[in-house]
Length: 150
Image 1 (cartoon, rainbow, N blue to C red):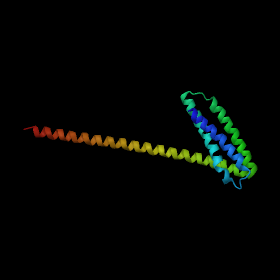
Image 2 (cartoon, rainbow, N blue to C red; image 1 turned 180 degrees about the vertical axis):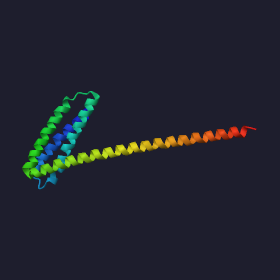
Image 3 (cartoon, helix red, strand yellow; image 1 turned 90 degrees about the vertical axis):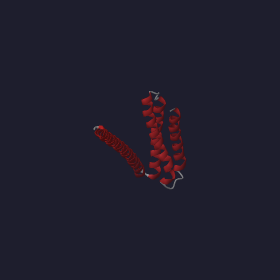
Image 4 (cartoon, helix red, strand yellow; image 1 turned 90 degrees about the horizontal axis):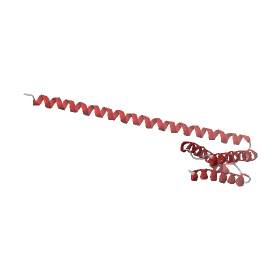
């Protein structure tokens, strides 16, 4: 848990450092996309860590501090990107981040529904199989009783 928190915080620091060093020399946004993506991924990781800390009852102090540092890093990144490439580029980045998050949620929901459908189908198949087996046993018992009768 602590290692994951530190990993998220370290990724925030490494990402903003990479963005700062590359922003001046970047000819296009593609030169710093990996660092920007890492910054957003680290923020998501810190959100997951917060949920996990709540579930386990662990101290959330470090997570809250790291989340605030991540917010500051995103604001700093925003200022750097807007200053170098313009406001519309930042808006496009935010829009794409939201779209990707929505797609990931939809994909996870679809996978969860598919697993539930498969589970229900397996349960139904087991029920039908057991019913057929019981039917065969009943017919067999009736046949044995009829055969045994004189």
